[in-house]
Length: 446
Image 1 (tube, one colour):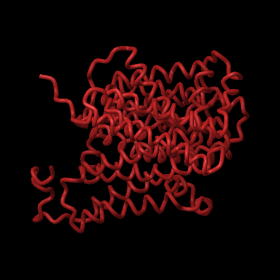
Image 2 (cartoon, rainbow, N blue to C red):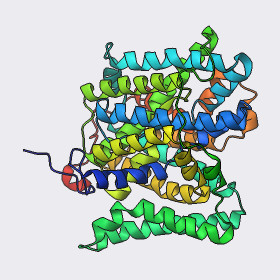
Image 3 (cartoon, one colour):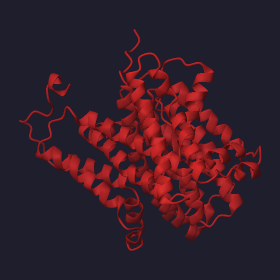
Image 4 (cartoon, rainbow, N blue to C red):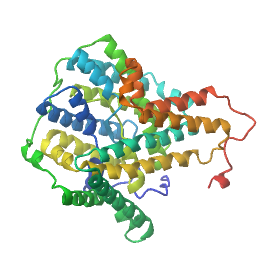
């Protein structure tokens, strides 16, 4: 007997989808991603040339596609899109600036192998997660992910090319169209599923048209880009293995793994698929393998993209086949620079207007997990203090980071990492009242 599909999904995890439909729905995930932003920031910090920056972004598209296929195909086996993490930006810039590009590659490879080994053959990742990440922690981490990403989207609207007023209008139109499509998806019995399925593409088109009224969209990068560019192994030189850089990046990888585990909880909640030990260990192995292959092609460390997990809730499409189609599209983009140039031409305010609604979807899915839990004084602290710390780190002035040790700099560069770590520690350290009920009766929670 097939498993009942969750109420919020139009297409289940293992539902069959026609190839044209899978490509169309998969394209939404690709268009809504801001995966080129982190590589561009890193390229700027490393003072890469325009040509090397373009190639770097292209390799990140390629690595993202390969890692997505690995994770969705035989790793986690859930609809998770991989993408460059923001967590290691400071560490990569510091290592590259002091030791050169070869040391970046040399530091990425051992860390990726460590993450893979934690899943297989060591099989300790799942046991660790089971012990330290109960529903209270998992739900709080999901809320933290959404809250930490909100300022990222808003800042990318405020500081995008053009005036703040114009960018806010464009972002508002894109997000409004997305919200209208979501509402119509629930209200119209005959055509509702259509609006939900194509909601992201409609929002991107509407936002881009609105943006063109203020400033014509510049498609010159598409004209200048080559049609075909083949990837090369170790494009930035042979790896240099520096023990300090390796240890630093291993710490960063563990923080990224904590971040991506939050994304897995989001996807598990939306799709109603259990994160059992076998699946979690496969996920850790898939994460490490994807990062390892990416490092060989000159990409940055990859993580499960929370924004794409939020899109699952918005569109109601939880199909692995659709996400694998996204992976194939990303791989093709990695070989065809003109395609990556088209995506980069989408106005930043449009992408981040959609991104804001996605963050809201992530937060509400976290709330669903903790809803049945009784919020006593202990649980209030476990939930509330990490959220406070996440916001504190998110608004922390960047100048402060230059005054702390490197390891603290890397940790404080990610509100998600700080909040998630605080949630785990508080849950372990604060004793539970074993005489008090831990959850409401099922009827009360409904």
